[in-house]
Length: 556
Image 1 (cartoon, one colour):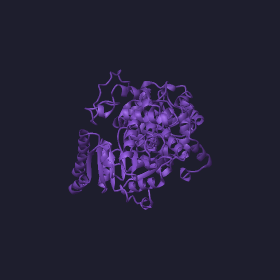
Image 2: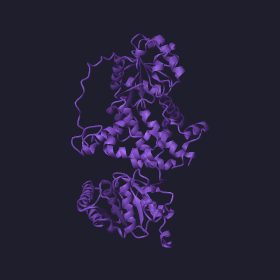
Image 3: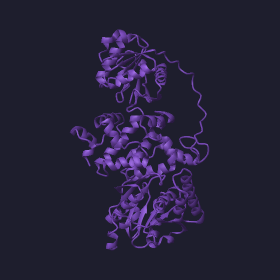
Image 4: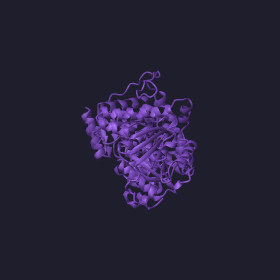
């Protein structure tokens, strides 16, 4: 390689002819991305039938874009005219860069790269679209490992704006620079990272998805409530089980298994037993017609309601007319407003409930919104036990305290439950309705009825650290902090990876800025104390920043 290559650094101008190997949904999407941006593309498959399937995928995608007004017919024709479909890798002899998009099998990818090394010109850059395999192990199958890197596009490639540019320890700087410039030319955000299991997006996403499977398999929460909780409570575009069905359970299993083996055997990445069982049974998600949910037919997104299991006669809820709200902060005021707007008679009180004993004695439900520590909350409930009439439901809005310990501070633990309102409280959307081993069935039914009257949606869960939303959300945030602490990537790039690559409404550090590192640390400590799972231990950087009173932005 001579000086002429160096002149192309940060321009991407030298890369004009692009090869794409493998024309499944992902590969065909990558072909479309390159051709849309004026590059000549050689699209390669192993046989004529596979080649025609790839051509059909590209044609269908561009036709949809025309129908939706996102692509002019003339531009579609020009796009298709820049693509040459060929059988066999020999057609790539003049390509400046080749992107491999064959199935995620290391032996297959290594064989493809060895052959590309033989047929491609010496200056050609070879890139893998792998989402989890070692780019280094792929690169060493060639005699040009310095010209090999990862270009991990996200599905659907024409829409998703993120590309993870994965460099190995031997990838040349100018090769990385050319890849970054090419991403910019494509209108993509290129995030450059080292060759590590899962890179950024999958390392964070699949740990969360695997945790969700384990939570569902344990009976902690129903699949519908689990997915609803993460959509409505965390603002995610899809619930984890529905997303796994979309990805494909076999694909998810392979990614997790690879991350577990390559990433230090972190148990949080060991595929959940239920996932393995579903894959073995052939239940692979949407593509097979059944996964965590059942679909109308293979490839359909329409969920078929399953025959409900016979349920016992419903438990009668207690009648609630008057509600007491205890607390003096914004959360208490918001809850009082929400209850009043729903037509309840509302009594407000400060933390010293004895001052309003007479008023609280006439309520049917009292909700604690004081956000106190465990000792203070137990003392508060002992006071409520004294002033409230028998049969009054006592609820706490805590997001972190063990409700059973609060309940046992009273002489009526059967009347105590949790109502964890996801913020903001006045605009009630999702409420985690939490029951302990002592909560009476009619109290749980009453709590859910109250949530419905408030116009919210309740999800039922037992009294475990983090309930549903926090139990899944905060380990994901903790993993992001650990990634930052390892200096693997930056705050901005990690946030970009999750917003642009996974469609999250905010990146993990934007979420952490919103909740506060101190709150995140408190919740993570509670999750770890309960499980003693090493992967849930608070990231050292999180503890250090809270101690120092510094923000994540100071780490960059």
